Length: 255
Image (cartoon, rainbow, N blue to C red; front, top):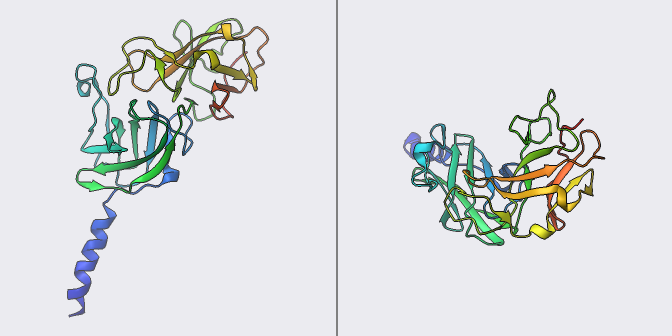
């Protein structure tokens, strides 16, 4: 008789385990990998369990007429009741693009895997949330002006232009359309305030040749920087506006 009462409870417990599970601490800026560092048009990673039934990444077939999908592998993410654009899904990690039409202030993020919804997590959006994409060794992902990757064997050189890649640099002028890939270059709206700092020192404004969205991508920004002649080796590099700089600790390979 005792099993008659326990069995439904066991079924419920097992079913509960299949619901998406994540927390405020496991939702992070995809470039900076820092929780609570979000803004509109920012790429964000959600880490947890039971987030998706399988693994799927955004493919050209998922982008219809330049429109980014809001469902990928039966996974959707609601941000303030609006569907985020889906970039990548797997059982333990989901990458999304925060909708551009949202504004700074409180918000909620909720992942839905098929018909099972995870918790609605309260977060705070800033106007920007700059983060530089980086390798696991804390060096930024950058390319030389002619395309090749900046690396140990091919470091950046003083006087050359390198391209740094980021997310969360904020609104652009003209504005970036919601749910669509960027089709043309657009400078960040706070262009006059934008800074690149090497070892904490802002470089001359004329050395920042571009800071804005990367055409052909969603949520990806680039900074085209001419390296100062007096730049130190492997400097710490930060980007953003004085009130909202990317986190410290990322460096540029420079010799």
